[in-house]
Image 1 (cartoon, one colour):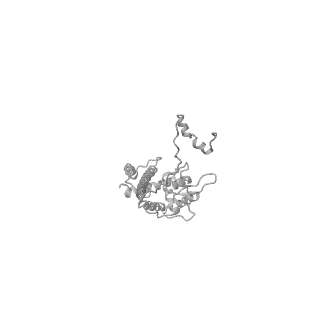
Image 2 (cartoon, rainbow, N blue to C red; image 1 turned 90 degrees about the horizontal axis):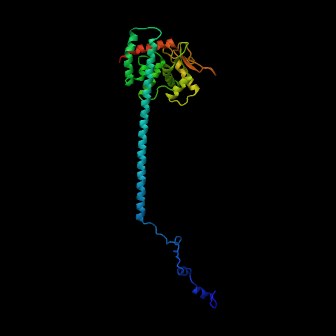
Image 3 (cartoon, rainbow, N blue to C red; image 1 turned 120 degrees about the vertical axis):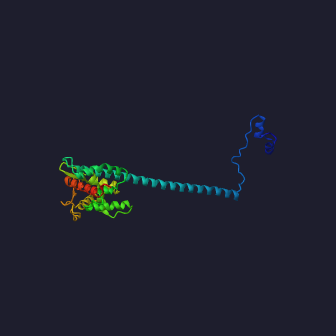
Length: 294
């Protein structure tokens, strides 16, 4: 404090920090206005708000159009995928039919003895043309396994009915195990294995795969598989009728059901190889004599 001056007089004559800094040649920092309170802003005008709403509306419409485009593309993709699956299934079915028909011809030819006659000659003369027809999709698969002229067994009639409904894109006229057995009948024709004892056998695991992969039944349980196998056996009675309930091992059945053993052999469908070979030969003859040259 200066001597002889009052406090107010001292403050009045005191040198400010800015003056001191200027006298010393120092830079004086600009006052910080970042935190200064600004005047209250006015709300946007109606024109500004309207323009903003229009832009947002256009963006929403654009997104909706994009969503519709993606939905349309998804529907087209699903349709193309379904068509591809249908073509793949058809190709697989044609290939399966070719294998089944060749198997019938092979069993009929009988490699263990020479059987040259008019029917055998006609079979092999038509063999190459039949394969060409199959390759070019000119033969209906059902005609090779369950032809209109080869309905000696009830299982054939039931299978033909299901296939006819499928060709017309209609619901199967069969239900439950009767529907499922028709898939197993075809599996037996195509895949049954000949044993040393002169039998044709198809075990329950092969039947399970057929039902799951071709009949569209997800992971069928053991009871479903075996009941379908029993139903098939009952519908192969040689006189064209159906064996009574429980008659799945009837000697008059072309194919019989044999239950498995716990920890041993699996349940299976069984036929006498020679008898089934004669049956297959009769089917080939019937088709050739009544429509095989078409």
